[in-house]
Every structure is written in structure tokens, then in C-alpha cells.
Length: 96
Length: 490
Image 1 (tube, helix red, strand yellow):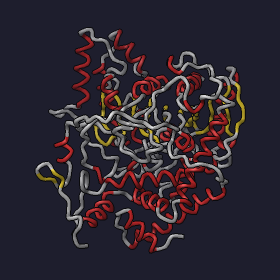
Image 2 (cartoon, rainbow over the protein chains, first blue to last red):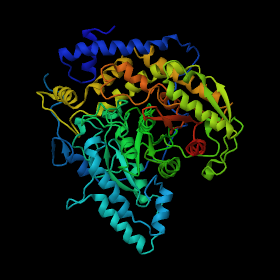
Image 3 (tube, each protein chain N blue to C red):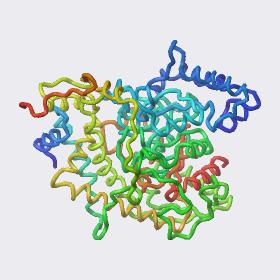
Image 4 (cartoon, helix red, strand yellow):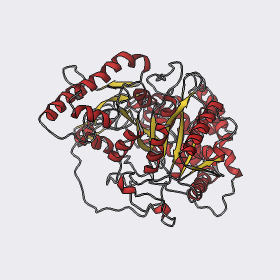
């Protein structure tokens, strides 16, 4: 069902590096799982709407008021690379 | 004196000065020192400065206050173990993953704030399957937890540490989370009570998200009454979680149904269960014979007490598990995208940003987590979304309709929790589908959003726990507590 190219594509989308050996195992495992969930094709879903929420709810709104979160420095300090209250990252638009 | 200690009994003993908070807390800490190394239920017991257990210090302070005549709060001095995916300010919350191994929470989850305000003492964080993915706690990055009843067997998962802690008297009660059965199945495997509340009854603010439309935090306790007390404390609308709903008298789902004889706000005083539904699709081939016999036994005894039983049908039951294994991984792939080595947690080096992401996530996530993220990515990807995810969401609507129709005829449903008694460590770890089948009776409740309770119902011939599950309509947890208490007395 799933081939090597599919696993490569998925690992790229999910931003998870996958080794050759792992890719082979994943091909098999994901294949087995997809085969199992394929049963859903038997169900007649004509006219049925998707349940996008677990419990039917109306629009939940609140006043657009700001509330200061007191621990901002702690949040930034958790970043593996941070400097003067900012999170540091590698160049986003750099060369690959 | 400490046999089968419940919160009410405990507070009664405190009032009569037959024991103190410190004495009981000390008992749990001694038990932990004696057994945790073997069981690995706790990943960490919280210690205060000076090396003393944090909770011991707090216990002494509470005893002082009570001696001065302060009124005890609802959970005063109750020592609670917390699953490693629920944030407690200042403490590590790792979701049993290397990617968050040293992550310290910067705020309290809402449930923790509420427990603290009620006087509860937090003992430590318990082991779980990594990111709540698993049914055995074998997927933890920090070792498996053993079932206290038979240490060659799993405690269940993903809240295995919490269930084992309560079962082995290493805590008074525990918090777990349930996305597809992760409170109920380990509660069943460990012979304790576990409640998955209605979706929206308990705030998820501060819970490390797995599948946002399925997750709920709930109590794991030794008695149904204790589960009720803790539930009533942690439930309720939270402005920080827009999916929370205040429990009203007329739940929206059943507004057109003739109300059963209950008053939701009166704490179950007037809850009267009359008819219990037996969903035939839950009693099929593959259900362990001893489990079936235990449940039949419970049914017979409840009949003697006057409860009526009626067979009902939930025709889409066979599709619940495949439906879950599409929706859940899809939501997982989204929720775990945030772990990328940038803002918190593990960060692996790379020659560019993309490599930082790929290496961090490869190193930080375990095998099962990576598998489910990739599966979720697939079912959401262009070309496959309609075939898998959209279709699963429609099947989910049908599953919910099945329950709605059933609850027009009966007040609660009875079913097994698990298809088998606790299995051996290592038995199911190499076959993903076989492991997933452990959840076959629990996932429906998460998909439909209804509350469900697992309660002990007997033992196998070799002494392993067997439990029974009750399911109730949306926001009717009181019915679960009422029938659960009856089963306890059988």
C-alpha cells in the first residue's frame, strides 16, 4: 500500500527524520494499520455530516480584553536558544 | 484503620483526631519508598528544599492549621498522584517523552489549581505511555510500570502509573487522562475506579494535548464516591478552555427527551436508574470468558435489586476503533507539531532550521509517537483527506447517533472495559493492531463525547482484576456514580 516514496514524503511533511531501516518498518506497520481502518469504506455515509466537534456547541465568545501573563521571562528562558528576552532560531530563509 | 480509606472516612478520622494528615501522608511516602522502585509508578516524587518530600512539609502545615480550628476544605490533606501530562507549576511535565524530559511547567493546569484550592497535596508525577499513546505504559521513554497485582503484567495505559499508584496504596487518588480509554483501561487492569467525564465537563487547560476532540482529564480512585468528590471539584466552565461546558439541568443533546428522574444539580441525591441497556455489539467473540461471566454476574445481582435490563443495539460499534485510529492520529499530528526544538524541550543541532526540526523530532519522539504522527499526516494529506479523515468524521456522527437512540430507551449502558485481563509485559508490543484492539470497548465513549466509568467487578481465577464499564448520556455523570456505588456494594 505505502511505498518508500510515500514514507519519504510523510517524513518530510511531519519534519521527522526517518532512517532507511525505520522506513521499511514503517511501510509495513502503516500498511497494516491502514488496511485495518479501511473497513470504514463499508459504512454508508451518504447524507451524514462530519462531526467537527465532540459536543455540539454554539460560538463560544468572550470580551476582547487583554490579560497579562506574568511569567513571560520564564517562557522565553525555556527556549533552548534565547537572548535578551527573545527566542533565537536558525535562519528561516537560509540555504538548504 | 487505613484499610480501604475513602476521603469521607479519612476526614472523619481527622476530625476525631484518630489520625493526622501527616501520619497518612507519611504512610504513602513509606509505601512509595518501599515499592516504587519495583513498580515504577512514579517518575518523580516531589521534594522540597532541604531534601524532604515537599508533600510532607505541606502536610505538617495543614495539621497545624486544623489544630487551630481551621475548617478542612473538600480535599484537605488528600495525597494525589498526577499523570505526567498534566502541568504543575515549577515541576517537570514530560508526557513520558525525551523531547520534554527537562521541561518545567510555567503555570498550573486548571484542574491542579482547583485541587490545590481544595487542599489536596500533590505527591508526584506518574508514568504513562509517551504522549498518552498506548494501552500498556510500555511506550514510556522512562521504563514500563508494573501491575501491582502481578508484576509480570502491564498496568494498562496510558495512565498506567496513576492506576498502579492508587492500586498499590502509593497515593490516595490520582489524576489521569482518557482519549480512547486511557483512564478506564488501566483502572480496570489495576482493579480501581476510573472516570472519563463528558467531553467538555473538565478543563483541558494545562493538559499536554493528544487529540483535542477526544481528551478528558479524570479521577482514578479506590471508591466511586471519591471519584465523584474529585470530579465535582475539577469540573466546570473554564474561560481558558473554550470547549468546557457548565453542567445544566437540560443537557443540549437531550433537550427533546423526556427527562429521567434525576436532578443534575443535587449531587446525585435523586438519581434513579431504572433501565440498564446491554449493547449486544459489546458482547462478542473475543471477549474473555471470565470477564463475560463477571459482568453476567453483576447483571444478575442488579436484577435482584430491581434494575431492569434491556438489550440495545449500537450498530456502528465495529467501526469505532478504525474511526478512532484515523481521527486520533490526525489530531496528534497537529498537536505534536509544536515540539520542534525551538521554544522548549529537547533541541538537536542541525546545519539549518529544517535539520533542527527533523533531528529533534527523530531523537525526541519514541517509535509509537513517530508512527502515529506519520499516520495522522497521511490521513490529512492532500488526496487522502476525504477518503480517510472526512469519512471518519461522518462515521463518528453515526456512532453518536447510535448512543442518542439507545439512551432514549435506557438510562445507562453496561459493558466490558477490556476484552482481556491484563496481558504480560512484552506480549503485544510488536503488533500495533493487536495493541490497539485493547481499546475496543472504550473508544466509542470518547468518539461520542459521553461519560463512562470503570469499576471493579471481580477477579479472574488467577486473581487478576476484572472491571465493568457503565456509560451514560452527556453530562449525566451522576447516573454513573449512582450505579457504580450499587456495584461496589454487591
